Amino acid sequence: MTTSPLLDIQDLHLAFDGFEGRSQVLDGVNLSVQPGETLGIVGETGCGKSVLARSVTRLLPMPPARITAGTVRFDGADVMAMDRTALARLRGTGVSMIFQDPMTFLNPVFSIGQGMADVIRAHDTATGRRARPRFQARQRAAELLAAVRLPDPGGLLDRYPHELSGGQRQRVLIATALSGTPRLLIADEPTTALDVTVQAGVLRLIDDLVRASNLTLLLISHDLGVIGALCRRIAVMYAGTIAEDGDATLIFARPRHPYTLGLLAAVPDLARPEHRARPIPGHIPDLLHPPPGCRFHPRCPMAVTRCGAEKPVLREVDGRHVACHRAEEVAPERAIAA
Ligand SMILES: Nc1ncnc2c1ncn2[C@@H]1O[C@H](COP(=O)(O)OP(=O)(O)OP(=O)(O)O)[C@@H](O)[C@H]1O
Ligand code: SF4
Ligand SMILES: [Mg+2]
Image (cartoon, rainbow, N blue to C red; front, top):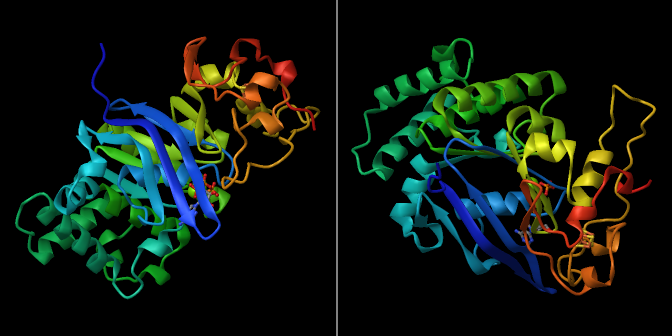
């Protein structure tokens, strides 16, 4: 049975205009997410993961950011055409975002209770209701803090962000993100700033919350292990394009894009230390002057003349979508050598 997508991004082109010219940061991104899906987005630093995520709720400064083509639809509604009221409703109850550094999003001069109550009351008005009284908003905040397994939620309401540990702050942010009962949760590197021991707990919490509420999850991470643990589907990004998109187990077992193959070969295998991790040589291109054709071609061990001239489109190969002229020939032995 096919349902209509909750999030539908079609041919999205986004550029930043700067003194040196225009950098085409997203170059024709197609991504459609069904309700209840868990999708992980992975790719090297600077490839456009955060910009893509922020486009979903228009959380980008425009200008200098400029959508030059394409559409973003949430539950059928055109996000680019939304007025302030519709956008506030979308951010309140449609899509919630959590980011890498919770301190940036918690106001240091407000106690946890004050900050959360403000957000809860703002969600009320964004959805056309009267804001509930402050004491009720505090009660709701305490319930949400308990739901993210923070001990003594009542006491926590009167504490300030700097009094909390990084892991506790991230849980407060997750609780706040859930306050509008969103349908889509976007988590952009939610555990990257945390200690390894704390990371696992926060990831387990996100996983449990997503399962319990049948939330749709878009998780951004540079860590394939994190994506593999939480997401059934994976989209691999390279320099503002989707390289490969499909079932995570399938792609991990049998990648069909040379870049995915390179990413997987770059992960150390603790079980087989004799298999040395091989990083992909070279760097992501300068997006002010991106290479023509396939943006990966200067680094690709399989590149042929066509790759420098013709941009590959996403097409179905072997049960997933791949943007590579030679997807059918991609095999593990072609992994990029160190
Ligand atoms: N405000 C901005 N002005 C100009 N360029 C920007 C701005 N924000 C992002 N960019 C550019 O957009 C590109 C994509 O950035 P983005 O932050 O989405 O990358 P990312 O994949 O999230 O990287 P990371 O893994 O480091 O978080 C980069 O080349 C970056 O320099
Ligand atoms: S299109 Fe060509 S350059 Fe791009 S990934 Fe495929 S083989 Fe490599
Ligand atoms: Mg980012």
